[in-house]
Image (tube, rainbow, N blue to C red; front, top):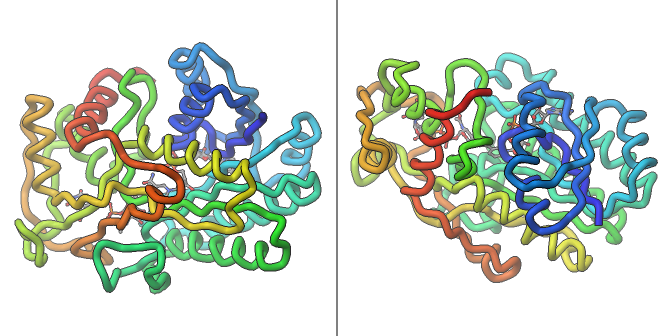
Length: 335
Ligand code: NAD
Ligand code: UD1
């Protein structure tokens, strides 16, 4: 059974390839290395003792995609290939909409041509905007996204709904990730942000490594237990396993179009993360309180019930595992 993974060398794609290979799926991967490195392919092989069939190229290139489908009988596509930097998306909206929306349209066109109608799509909790109710269930209203990155996810979700309504023989799972963090426990693959990290966990890791001097905590006047922002952090290996669960359901052609949150259902504050990182890893994180970051919300965590009931998906890894594996990757990395 061949599964095509787009963006297979990226942060979540690489961890998902590992889990797919561990579950004996044949993996065909594509990446253009716009935000990843070739060496990741060797690391995936080192962890699993197996190889993926890899194609280097751009998902916007229809002929490139056709050649992959011509060479391989693909049963399902898991689509990770996208740009993901929120700040950059505000500076470069056209590039983001082309890479995150047009590429999916190209993919869908080629999938249809080869009668491959099963897709897992990487969406984000960002589509909920500023949530009215916490925890956030899949039934919550989406919209009011605050940046082109978030809006690109919203657009693709709508495209997939329209596609399904035009042809119910498609089986589509949309996964809305909360805050993926951590790394594979081997320390061989992990998150590789470009430049200075915008997200909390990679920033803390760089402060621990003394590559950055001090973490700015964005706001301590939120209506939360300690005043700092609260999020639903999910270990990237749990997240990858969530894709296996979605795939299992998809391959039974039981999905129609289904949407699932992938989160733990537990919210931790910025100070919880700092203190747990310090305690588990025996390092000191220098931080200072600064103003709120524009566009941030106070609290965001998932209601994970639907994924548990319909996919049998439950997160097994704790916050301690997340901070330990994040630091293990950062301190040992040679890539
Ligand atoms: P990533 O940047 O690490 O991985 C994306 C991979 O896709 C990279 O290897 C990149 O080189 C490749 N790529 C990008 N555009 C491409 C194109 N046109 N053709 C071929 N390859 C291309 O990102 P990630 O963190 O692994 O995220 C994967 C997916 O999950 C993305 O769609 C992202 O928007 C979504 N997501 C991520 C997070 C997160 O916090 N990491 C949260 C919610 C949703
Ligand atoms: C961000 C993105 C979101 C994306 C998600 C993926 C923004 C506005 N939103 O969400 O679209 O889906 O990443 O993981 O960028 N914090 C600090 N100091 C820092 C960095 C972060 O205090 O240097 C705080 C934030 O204010 C927030 C928490 O840490 O309370 C988590 O921030 P971050 O890791 O950037 O994730 P999100 O903002 O939840």
